Amino acid sequence: SPGFGPSVASPMLGPVALSPSAASPSLKPASPGLIASPQLKPSIVAEGEAQAPDLSGLYSHDGLLDHEQLTMAIYASQGLDFAQVQGQAHSFLQQMGLRPHDMGVVNIDEQGNTLINQCFYLSLSRSYLGHEANWADTSELALRLKRAIEAAVLEERPGWAAQDGEDGNEAMAFADFLPLAMKASSAENAEFNVLAQLSVCILDSTAGHVEVYLGSKYKDLEDESVKAQNLVLLWYTPGHYQCLVNNDHVGSKVMLTYEAFKETLCKHGVVYIETLE
Image 1 (cartoon, rainbow, N blue to C red):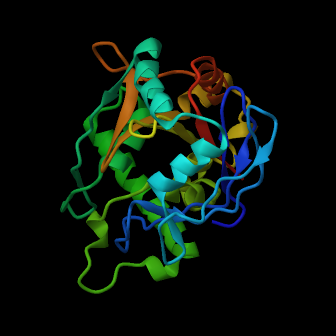
Image 2: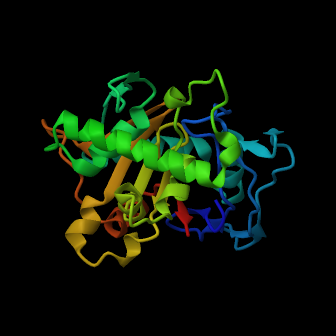
Image 3: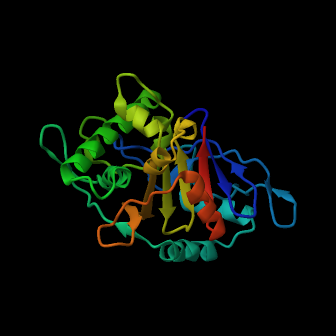
C-alpha cells in the first residue's frame, strides 16, 4: 500500500514510522502471522538515545516478518515491557466500561450462500452502525465492506487473487488490508467513501496495544457527531475479531471521536500503532 505506514506511539514516547504492512485478504490464503518488513526510523527512548529495533534475528518468509516478533522488537526499542503493556489492554476495557461483543463468523452472500470466517467484516459493520441496527442491515453492510476491501486489495495486489480450487470467499480477513481501501474514493462505490471516512481502532488482546487505521478523509470531517459515529472499535484475539461496545445491556455504540479516544489511550498508558497516509 504505497504511501501508508504505521507509527508506534505511547503517552511518553514519540512515534516510530513503519513502512506498509500487508498480508493476504479474503482472497488467496497466506500466513496471518506475517506482515511486511518495515523500514524503521530512529525512535526516542527514555534515556533520549536514538535507537531502532533490531530486526536481524526475526523470522521472515517471502519478504515478510513474523508479526509477534516484530511487535516485541518495536516494544524493546521503545523501552516498553511487552507483558506489562499486554495487561494494560485488559484493564483498559474495565476502566473504560467497554466489553467485546461477538458477532459470530457466518454471513450470507448475494446468492444466499453461507460464508464463514466473516467475523472481521461483521464486527466492522456492527461497530459502525451501532446497536440500533438490525441483523439484516448489519449483515448487508458487512458483505458490502468485504467486497469493497477485497476490490481495493486486488487492484493493488492482483497476484493475491484466489487460484482455482481455493475458496477465497471464505479465507480469513486481516486488518492489514484496511489502508488499501481506506485511502480509496470512488463516485461509483459508496463503500470506498465510507471506509475513507472511518477511524478503525483495533485493541489487540494478545499484544496489548491498539492498531489505528485512519481513513484518508476522516480528519476532514467537521461535524463532531459524524466523527464519533465513524469511530470503529474492534477487539482482536488470535484468529477472531469482535466489536467493542459499552458495557450495558444493549451493547451500545461507543460515541467518541478518534481524538478523544486517543487522549483516553494516553491517559491509561495504552500504546497505539497509528497508520497514517
